[in-house]
Image 1 (cartoon, rainbow, N blue to C red):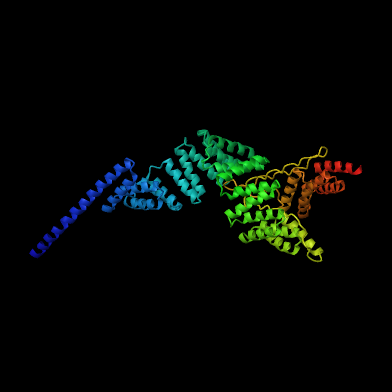
Image 2: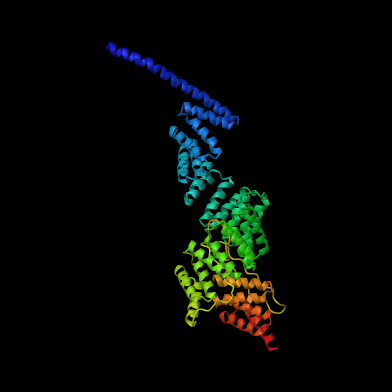
Length: 542
């Protein structure tokens, strides 16, 4: 018994200093932490981080020090380190809603959106469930692809803050992402009613109007956004100019469109979509050298962009550099072998270069990929007809092969109306090609890469090029382009009428009458073709 008592006495001598030491460390850690709070309050953030770190070295269980240090380093953009601090903080104080909210913020910073969603939901459960928390939760859910859940979170946000325009703007953007553009516009209207000088909301509403084909309204909203926010550093300025340019392009206001595309690209010189949109406008205006320059730049910026190679191939063909054109279209196929338009483009080029067997191979593959495409069917039928009729492959004569018009996966901008050529004093102008109805859109306005004006691929490109040449009074060149159009699509009455008009301007009345007759055979109610034929026939009789 005495031995046991002696042992306990000896142990007590050892324990007391350890307890005292622990108490001293805790007291010191508390003092250092307090100095850290003072430094943070005074704005000496680096000093505060140093002091919090010192306090945690002495006492790792100070949840408040972890939270404060994490918040400071998160402000410096050190999201991973901040997330570690907040994770440790919620482990020590799991009922602290603010720490969970901060953890959600940090997880967004490191792009861990599901983890951010879980953290925000826990913060909401603990309370108080604020509008800001629901707004952050919606952001995380949106980034995680949970758009419908994000809308529900924003519904809660709106209920808590009916006077705040930001949730309406955010919810409207989500509706737009779900292609519910009318719902989106209603939310943008509410945001603007609460804050009339809100450029981001005007931009978003203009964007949605464009998706619905309301291009005049889109231009008005983009104009208001740029008027309210003229600062060149505004993050949405380049996009606003680009989308306004696309709307102008659709409305046929070529000069305004070109100006906006150019200014947008100057602000964002790595934007391939703007380059390709501008290159399409250049091509439709007949400026194929400028179109090629833009497409060269696009390929340099994105060497894996199949569409950039596809349209650059078209530029090369238009300039007579057919080997380069075929090389580019081949590269487009290599990059995206599932794109029927690439096979159609190369097949059409082979057809116009009289390489019918190669054309058939490509066009059959295009048809397998897109069996309902009438353009593919028509060109394939003509290639087979030519192949069956020819004794041997004919050496290709110099021809122009039009730029392909790749069809966007989900086009959003209706096509720009083709400009009407300048008529002679007597005959009326060529019938303009009407823009198609706007197609279903994606969550963001997509700039046209090539004009979706024609449903007929290359035939439409030749037609557009021919019309542009007519405007420039280049009638012989227009005839060449329009001839390629009717070769590819013999039922394109607009091209027959346009070519007849070109012949008429050159005084070749018999050829003009023959073309107008063909246009009327396809479309007996084509009034411009009737009037043009009457004028040409009257001159032919003299």
